Image (cartoon, rainbow, N blue to C red; front, side, top):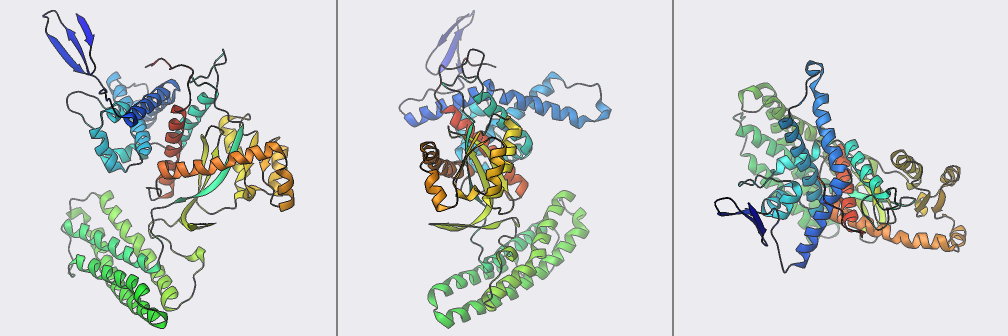
Length: 513
């Protein structure tokens, strides 16, 4: 039997002399430089996942989790080779699809369509080419991302960076880099990871509440449980009309007339919200008592009940907040404000910067290496002074990577405190934090090393912009805090694979596996 390789197919001739064409995993594309760069990037990322041991470690841990879930009743038994292959295939797709989706900065729905269209993504994600191409749906992609614990993602991330910074006995980088990654100097800064909420205008909370309650009522009615009420859609239409009138009043009216118009509209909104609340309470009770008469499972019914309860529980406070701000014209303290009905952990983040005086989200601490790797991405559920974040971050880094990491720390003045200066000296860490006192600051910047370190700190601002814009997106796409921590961990892993794949290599590593 003889084989010949053409540009886009492998042909072989059997004993009968009949040639058969076999489609190669990747088509050969010419004339598109950007595609060629993306293809080379994904090929290098594929190589790194295998050579670094990240993928093998993940596959092994997924099999171990199946054994752990078996319990005593399956003691002594082992998985079949077919079952292990199936677990490996699913785990490989989970890892690669999540990394590729975040790299593409697309929603689960859009990426599922993109994956179906792209032979390059299908190859990278391990989609079999067996005649019929089956790609994960948006829901499957979401489950793949969510079923991996955040601690496991941190372990994979640490393994990747450890291999990138290590050398083989002859002194070469373990991953074929010109130079191993340097983790001794760390730049830190904090930013705001914005959440998926609109600007928290009080009356918009009332609109959100009505929309959520009415959509839940429509779902219950669709499954055959009905109470007498007007057509549900009319309530959303009425609330939307009042919301548009409220927006228009800010532009059309001036002075006292503007205040009167806003107060009148809010009173109408409050009456409408109270009607919807009564209907929602009745439908919640109906579903609690009669869910077994529908096609809904108990968990599905409970999900709807919880959604209604979440809004009904916060509705009195949202009504009071809107009344105090618009009718009573009294301010509400930030700590007492409801910023979102769905993400109660959201905070007002006062940045004081041009174009971003206020942001609404969570505090995110970023630790960066000289090559641009994000060594640590720590999401914080409450606004904390930067000076209180420094030493815990160093402790986390050294617990993960050992005592050789972070021998020099560089930060802005927000991280500086007398306690931190003493702690850094005690830990024999070179203190690159900027003093708060202007005279001390001027003296510190006389040191050429200090100036060089802080000139480099400007790149950390750019790195945060890249990470937030291209990997986290305009806002964190998930709703609850645990899911958001998981997504940030996935984004850091995808980002570092992307950075690592673009570093110069000594020679291309031989493909393995």
